[in-house]
Figure 1 (cartoon, rainbow, N blue to C red):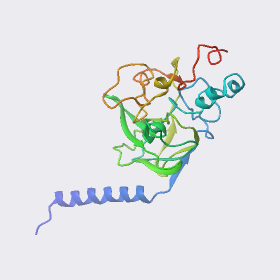
Figure 2: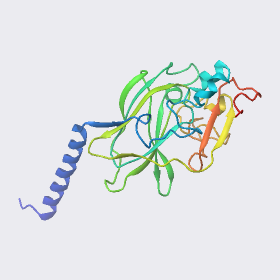
Figure 3: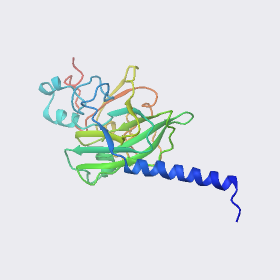
Figure 4: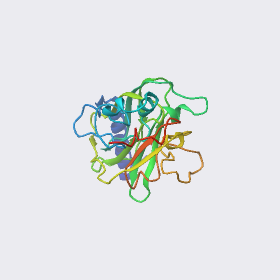
Length: 248
């Protein structure tokens, strides 16, 4: 049997791809903690301070306890970053129950990952459905990437749970860098459970903007998020017309 140049080239390409996949599978994961790493920002709120709450620490003495407790749930918060990695990993710890009788764990406690595409805007990549309050997972794998051109990602945090620990990881041979914070003035949404995201199956299309939703129900990404920044102050059924949240 005569081997052609095409046969040899095809085998070399296949072997090279196999080496790349094997290298990725065997690589150690390099982790970033957005709370302790310089230049990383949690977006979806008007300040940057430790934790994943939606009200600043100084507000605790000014608001009612139920309001403060709900503000510690991370609805609408997101972390944006650049990476050329073919896989994205998460290590997280949550404080509360994973699901509610009327709302699945994907919405209450899950994470959504989106990637910005040139023509289509932000496209859904993967979702995490927690099976325990503490886990380390591969959130996405087999991503179509260009090592020279990092992709732009947005990670959306849980709607109805409190995140106590979060790390984002990629195999150590690939890059992971924070994105610049959105410079646009945010739209602040103050409301009850619908504004917070009830009752989503995924998190990333929540009804923050009170707009028409696609089939599948509510989730955590407002149609406005891709165009402007939003601050979600949906607080289940604990809002009131008082000034405790809207005050200085």
